[in-house]
Amino acid sequence: CPTSLLSSIRMAQQTSTASVSTSSNQNGKVVVADNDLSGNRSTYESTSETEREALPFDVDLEESVYQAGDPAARETLHHFYILWASTIATSIANFGVQYNYDSISPAENWLHAIYGESDTYDLLLKVIIFMGTIVGMICFGAMGDLVGRNAGLLVCQYIQVAGALLQGVVPWGGSTSVYCLLITVRTFIGIGAGGVYPLAAAKAAEDSTAVDPVHKAQSVAWAFLWRNVGAIFVWVNFLMMYYTIGAHCDLRPWTNPPADYEGSQFSWRYVLMFGALAPALVAISMHVQPHFVKDREKKRIKGWNQQRASRASSLGGERTSTQSGVAKGLWENIKDDPGVWRKMLGTGGSWFFFDWSFYGNHMLQGKILKIILPGDPAVGAWENISLNAVGFVTVLCVIPLFSWSGVRWMQFWGFGVTALTTLLLGLLWPAMIDNINGVLLVLYYLQYASYWVANTTTYVMSSLVYKPSIRGTLNGLSAACGKVGAIIGVTLFTLMLDSCEDDDSECTDDKVVKIMYTSMTTAICGMMCTLYGVGVEPTGQKYKANAQIKCKDQIHLNRIPHQPIEKAVADDADQ
Image 1: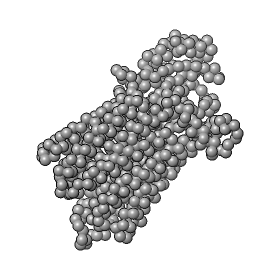
Image 2: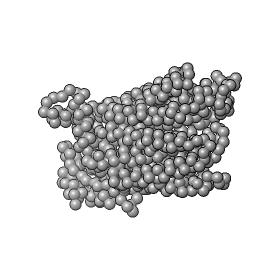
Image 3: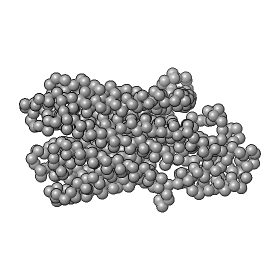
Image 4: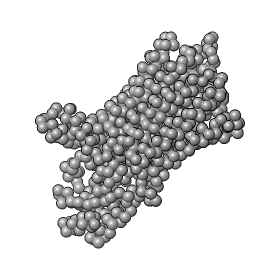
């Protein structure tokens, strides 16, 4: 009845942190819309599939439109299958990215023993993959908006498969030849890994078919969780080789190679080549996914591109070619997005400062752990496994908290905890470095755990802030900003530690303290970028997007037969 309908809308307005409005579409049917993090109208209406196709393609119909008269429609077996198939594919894709990033660290144990150690080559092997990543993020992010998430993600997997296999096959010869070839191939891997960032995040968010930011954020975070598993598996593979055929990787110098030289050669090549497995599995899963998933995306991309070409023609005053018109229209859509560059500061700026600190410390993780708790390579491997397990547990705890605090508050406080832990490490390092009771090690684990709060939210944020038609491009740009920070952090922190002699503990301790203080500064900058760029959820209110949707599910708009009721609903919402 009209009374219950209006009271339901009032309830949705009271329980939502977003603004709710209603209006009538061209067919005279009521449309209920809300503003999510992106500030875009996500439309819920009871129309047929044919009628929905006539709506503007700036609205993300594939993830936000469902039958209001059938609240249980999204919980069907059909939806369940798509959701989990997408989650598994994007999770394995994230596993592969982190594995390929980190695999060079354990492989260097054998590379140094066989080919010698060079600070220049070591730095390039770590940094060069991020340079390739920046190219992949920008190019494949735009490709996701212009061609489709699935097509772009599939190409990224092919690139990673080829690059990971070439790492183990191509490098032969002397030290210079091996290192230069590895550097070249890892640049290629970085391009494929970079494309996974915007495409996997967008795919996880959109395939969830969720309309509320919390549900979408959790879907993306579940996929991101498997980054930790990839980082752990790097060291699992190292231990498998170390305890078997690659047991002599810790000999310095290796002037007289033992009898298992071939085994050690195989070991580092196996560790690197294993990075092809996860992308190959993702590629297979993409090929066997249902045809309607591909058809649905093609229909949406076609609609976006038609709108972009029309927009470009109207601005240019003459008909442009399809390709140039679509690209120009995409750029115009980006410029038209309200507050887009301020949002970019919130996503790209915070990601820049986070990656500066995180990857600067992460790539030196083995060295710092060795300073705190010396031991052979096997001890270092177990330390890295336990540290990455802490990250895994942290992300598991963060995901359910999204529904309580919201993604933006979570990111703000994640940076805050990182600033606090790095400050404590910097202050206590000189006094506690020789303390054998493990206090410093516990603090370092807490610092690493704090990193994975903001690490998760920076990855998730771009999937929520930008509207779907420009999400891939701006997600890629935001992620590229992060990898610029990673290059700065890895280069700066590595050069700082390498400036000290191996036996100069006083110099090393001084550099570690400076690294921690620098990390604290970047965390504070990340807090400021988050606060100004995307803001935080209203203070004192728990995030109630899920409650909002449940209330709206009770509004059976498709059962409203008369215009007077529609007018009453619209008038009530306006008030």
